[in-house]
Length: 390
Ligand code: ADP
Ligand code: MG
Image 1 (cartoon, rainbow, N blue to C red):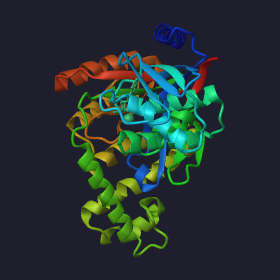
Image 2 (image 1 turned 45 degrees about the vertical axis):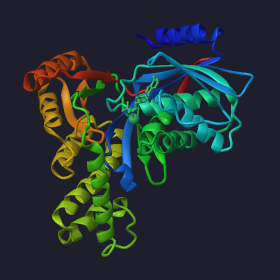
Image 3 (image 1 turned 90 degrees about the vertical axis):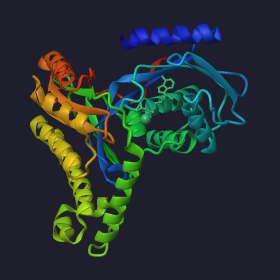
Image 4 (image 1 turned 180 degrees about the vertical axis):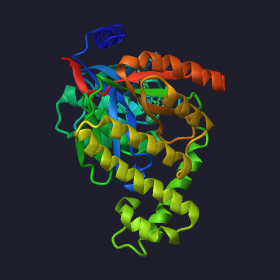
């Protein structure tokens, strides 16, 4: 469905629930991680893009201190007072709304009661970050309605805190950041330590970003994720004995790493090597995209997969199969796993004129080899959070 039709639909839903027209409608997109695999918690670099799938939020201010939020996806209305924002054990989706309002309030924003209707087409739990999209849609809606001053990075931080501390899911800052600050036909280069960022041209008319969902849910991901984090901290600690000023793997150049890597235990060395070279790839991607060298960019994505599979060991049979099938499909320029790993999605760059053939071939090829039909999303790089109707 086109954006305008979806906006019309969410306005109708708002009217049906609240009996009036919404003052405004905003949108905030999901995202795809193009490069920067497990670099965020190593204080390194990432390169995501905001995508065309998004969460819409229609809203109006109320005269009282009550928040009433309806999700069309869950067909549920919740209401709570701004004076005591509690966690909801039943309608857990509303904790994303509650968390954002809680941390806006805590940061000193003078909130007002609000009616809102939310409707998203970011697939939930597929690795395209519907959670960041709802957080940024709610935050941006409040900012648009009330008109308080808050920078994009600060609103992203509010969303991250809502997710980490209110919902209770630990994530980096990438998802919220790009959902708020992404730009059409650009990827976003982000330094996860300083939150410095740069819009990097990524023209998605001739080349599409295609996300293929293995349909394998990320089972082991929590324990394995914690273990990888600990191994990276250990690597940084060991390397800091020999290299000055190392606080995180972000601080280790590949030249220094090559000098000292043989002193590291094998598993620690492999983890560190992935992160250090992945940071190099993100830096390199900014250079090649700035001169429009999409073939070089595609090679970096391919290298990323090999490294995630062999050094960081976060791939799985389903992801490797999807990557193999994708790389052989018409129009494919590259393929890699995206996100934490152990299941979830791959991302490919695909030439636009062959994108339909790519999708058909990958769908059939993956189904033939695994017995499972994948979901496939053809994406473009889009703007971050924006007002779609005043
Ligand atoms: P994802 O990979 O999509 O971010 P998460 O588990 O992090 O998966 O977040 C998904 C959760 O976000 C959903 O279970 C729901 O609680 C919330 N959510 C996402 N989109 C919506 C929506 N349109 N309406 C209500 N809640 C939503
Ligand atoms: Mg999420």
